[in-house]
Amino acid sequence: MSETQTPPKTLQYRIDGPDDAPVLILGPSLGTTWHMS
Image (cartoon, rainbow, N blue to C red; front, side, top):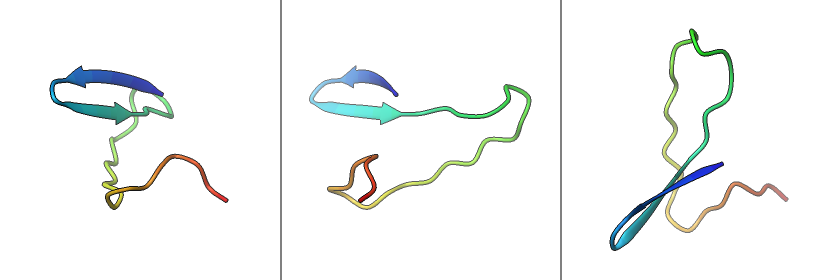
């Protein structure tokens, strides 16, 4: 996962899959993480 600092917020993003594939953007709810239990 990469992280970009944009004061005063932090934007986290992850890119998976082939470079030539279409992009799908999912916006999670506030307060969630990448971890699944």
